[in-house]
Length: 373
Image (cartoon, rainbow, N blue to C red; front, side, top):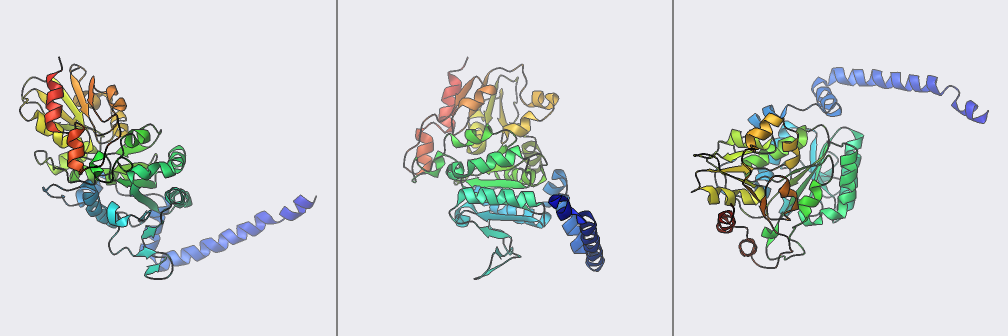
């Protein structure tokens, strides 16, 4: 009886509170139509389509640059196209390069305010992941958080929750993506980490090879509806694939994989690569008229494409395939019979030396191809 007494009149009371709120909101909406439209779009997760968003982002340029630097340029455009997009870092803004210019800093005191778009999580990766999930559950903002890729295991449980809960408003900006990190040594050089993320169901893992693919990666992260996205970005400069128009690289990357160099003779070899290794694949294939190079920045997106599209990129008639990534080789055997990977920890030396010594070069790739039947 006490319980029934406690809840007596609750529905009537709540109905009045709801009606009062609706009246208040209607009056505010009438006085602030633009802000109301922006708020309702945020609540409804209504953003412009990916193809349209890519068209409003300027071409990135032709000079070599690290994809973390490309990401810094792209995130400025994303913040303009998606007003409810906010981003933060676990004490690494200067390195991960995801600071939103003119976005202000979130918090109280110093130069901060609660209108800020840049969050300072401190050296608390797990807390960052949990906070991002909370922001997504709240249901207004799209939020990203950044750190070095090698530290992702500190907040892996929160990524698993985001993937399980289909929290599409969350994305992760994970830089310094391979043995190319260099002098910090094997403690800071990811080798198993990217593949460790790829095995999480419903998580898109994007490792772009140049600036235009980075555009597609960011756009995909804010337009995807089914779950979170991890953006895997390089510390070191990468060559741009300027032989393929910018819009084609963006559109291809948005499908997870595409032809980065088409064969000029009968197809007899497919080289599959991702991230910083695409430049090596292109260089190795330069004098191979029968070789096709496929850039595969996102396995998960590629697997969601139609059978016809997948066949057009990786035709089943060509079984002579080799894959290359500066990480563990296991995942690539799904697509290739031979893999040039890194199945060991790295060592401390300049990044280009570590890469070369562990086989991440066009010359070594060409040598490995020469041993194939």
